[in-house]
Image (cartoon, rainbow, N blue to C red; front, side):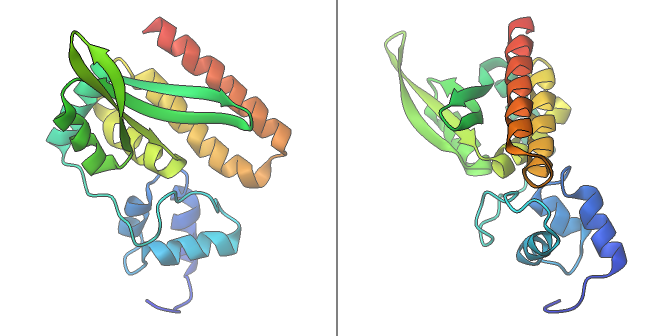
Length: 195
């Protein structure tokens, strides 16, 4: 569409969906608009400047329903959603630990992230796939959420935090954002103990 002005309908779609949709889903909702154009419009409107973690030319592959269901079952058993306290705030991340490296490569091929050695288990090397960054984490959890069982409450808490945190970066004072992160941290800890 190039430099074609945004219509009122397009702006309404963007504002209604910016915190609940991944960049790829927004492109599907706005035919003729690229991810780069949507990002530029968000910046122009003061919406969610930090929403996209990935450079505009990188896209995540689509995930089929059978793959999402399989990975959700695997993540329910082997995965973890954590929020760690850091010197400068909190860091939300999803991780999976396994001795079977190819399954972690599969997570990485679909959702990005990184794989690190994580010690040994029963004389086998153990590995950990780790995903962080709001956009990537939101895409991952949104994809798996319909199929999650055990981790569903934690995933929903994390998604709610990401959406509010993205909006809060432009609407709330820094102290309110810290309080929000602390509430999510406590809620995730409680949900993990309950599961």
